[in-house]
Amino acid sequence: MNKTIRVANLARVEGEGALKLKIKDGRVTEAKFSIFEAPRFFEGFLRGRRGDEAPDLTARICGICPVAYQMSSTHALEGILGLSVDGQLRELRRLLYCGEWIESHALHVYFLHAPDFLGYSSAIALAQDYPEIVKEGLALKKAGNDLVALLGGREIHPVNVRVGGFYRTPRVQELRALADQLQAGLKIALKTVRWVAGFDFPDAAADYEFVALRHPEEYPLCQGRLVSSRGLDISAFEYEDHFAEEHVRHSTALQSHRIGAGRYLVGPMARFNLNFDRLTPLAQAVAREVGLTPDCRNPFQSIIVRSVELVFACEEALRIIQSYERPDRPYLTAPWRAGRGCAISEAPRGSLYHRYTLDEQGVILNARLVPPTSQNQKSVEDDLSRVAEANLHLDDDRLTLILEQAIRNYDPCISCSTHCLHFQIER
Image 1 (cartoon, rainbow, N blue to C red):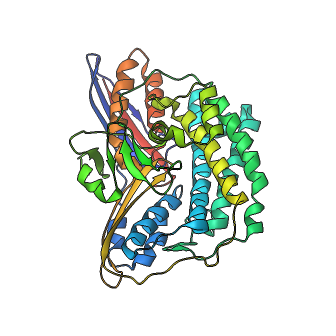
Image 2: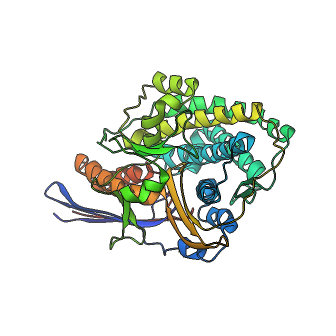
């Protein structure tokens, strides 16, 4: 029997897309994760603009992870100018990034993903039975938002980041005022790990090639070499020698693949597996306590990994605040010049690549931006095929729900917070 199942709206993802799944004789013959939202052409918008405009322009790409776009752009442009931002300015960048990880991971764990595991259609429905849990999730998210607001000038699309540093650095007492909130957030994050580890996870482990930044001394946020679980170890300048994007007919978004190797996975699970030894002792300990080890390959358990990263981000933020001394100047400068700059940073959802070419006046000649969601699209399609084949015994409604959940494992940031993903299964 042939069947077609359509879901008009998939809630709890950012953006608009579609899935078409064909099943014949107990096998998935086609799995297409489509993005049908109109392209936004940011790479085109950047051409002809001054390099110092890039951090503000790229921040507008995403309302959930604008800091990631700003950090990748500033590091790439500073590479062209020969600027090396270190000391307290570098620490403030990590602190800003911690704020983004906290608010983004808290949003996903509590409000987008946990309802799947607990049988609720939304966080609003979840709050009716678990009001204290939802309040704690909101408090954790607010801690991240307040960090971003202080360092970035506002919570959404920060305006205080610039090439060379910040337009303004905070006073010591301004940062110290957030310490109690972050201490409370750390306690909530630890509870979150233990809470989500008790969820019922489908058996969906897969053989991924994990790809993430790795730094010699710290859990990666803004800097490091790009490594993989299959031996890749490159600088950002080598990225386009190893990764390529292609246009597929069923999506307006480009899909990435590793040249000669195919699909790969970026994001929290990749970072965790490749950098477990760089986590704080407390984050490592709570991961081990709940049985999460650095060989996790079940995408449904990514909610636990995000929760462990919440512990890390709260600890890292507190460490930076406690040792902070206001720098003598908020930014470094250097004359604009022609050149090519590349950088990768770790957005909450995975590695984000930027490349810029400037002329002698510092005007952008071309730009390339490769976000995590486009890098993960092939893995999403592969997951959907595997999950569907393992659950064909379910009725269509239950099968649809688990496939929706498989998509939300990735917390895909398709473009913005409007939720409208059409879902179709043909049997």
